[in-house]
Image 1 (cartoon, helix red, strand yellow):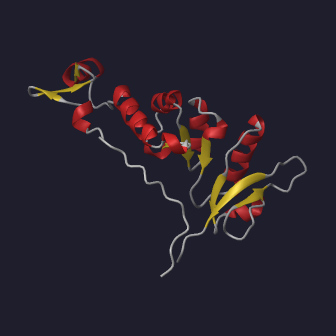
Image 2 (cartoon, rainbow, N blue to C red):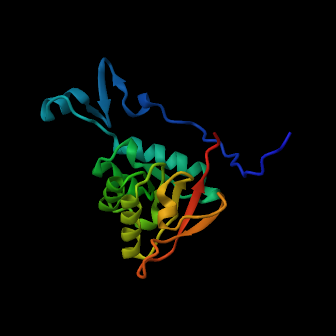
Image 3 (cartoon, rainbow, N blue to C red):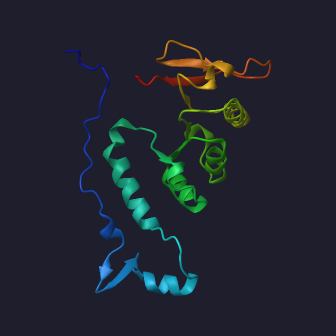
Length: 188
């Protein structure tokens, strides 16, 4: 039996916050941050989306606090909710962004998330998406890595390697810069 050499974090998140802690019932009325939801509905009309900044903050701080010793980059998955107000809130808390498309990358930047705190990941990236990410990163001259799959067009922009570690990524044009790529290979 082969043991994994992968480092794992043994940190446990204690005392998770339940949804009912953020959106409690008082009597028979649902509340959000001390405000009856029926009052919000009467003002804005229905249907509507309702988020709790206090709930987002509490969950983020609890999660970040659990991993404080490791000092990780904690990224919000823009795919989960690309609402600019939500993204700005997580940016204000110090979160980065995990994006999987050029549109998500642009929304994260528009929300004020610095490019060096954005991870462009996922499979099936087009050459155009990779070029756009490189162009945005070139403007700030600060970047994180690009996670690409073994079957992505990364080779078209210079992502080559043994399948582990980082490899330089460039568009092979005179003005392009190399970028680190994390290559992920999924087993069949």
